[in-house]
Image (cartoon, rainbow, N blue to C red; front, side):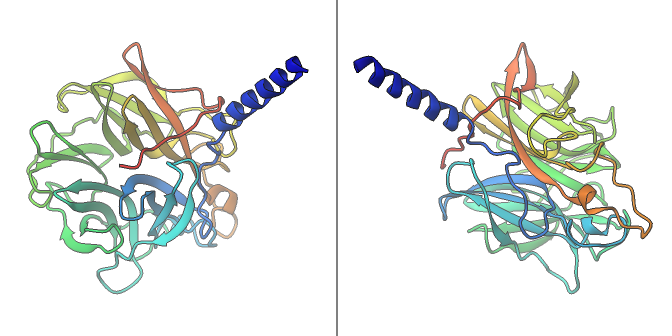
Length: 334
């Protein structure tokens, strides 16, 4: 009888551990309103004691011509009250500062002297095709819900998108942004006044959706090359060495985790790091999406999903751990 009890306890212990290890769903999140979540950006909301995921809310479930579903977007909010394991839709941010229906893409948020600063790509109006001059708009907030538009960020170039920011050892902020499929950068003490030139930080391959972060005593810079993400490494945030190969350039066996990972965010918590990215699971390649006879890209090729994976550094290289193996996310409340 004693052996039977030990076996039962061992069975339930192993089962519990297995279930716990599998508690990161795939996909991690699908927008329940438009089914077009893309370009995630994560921030902890201390006022609600929850993690927030802000993202481009593409209008994937709307039948429109060509890529119009990528315009007229708001910035969506998903929230997690269980340290990043599961996510629910919360709504959108009210960012309109002029009349009409306009377009917001790819936010990035930092906290500076008790104030949240958001830099988000803005295009006036809605188009059917890829077009329209983009502006990097600057917003501030003290509660993450109510945002004041501070106007365009005064950067060396115009028609720019996809900001990523990091605080440097000297206390200044550095912003990288996409211009002409290259990553340029500028520095600021207060996030209002920027100084920089037009020398690209990295320009060897066309890209967008860059993310800069520090992990395991090294600065990393990842860029979306539309077929996976390139990885660069630096000790000084100036000189970048490109790592051989790409990460997230292949599908996994998880639901919706194909054909590759695109434009994401990275959250570092001590010795752990997680990358959050989006996929086009109905496409055979990320740049796919062929219009039908009506000029509309089919819904299956429009929709997008948010996924998450673990990062690690092995032999000096940034890697994504095996996504086919179960893992658990833990984002601390801080």
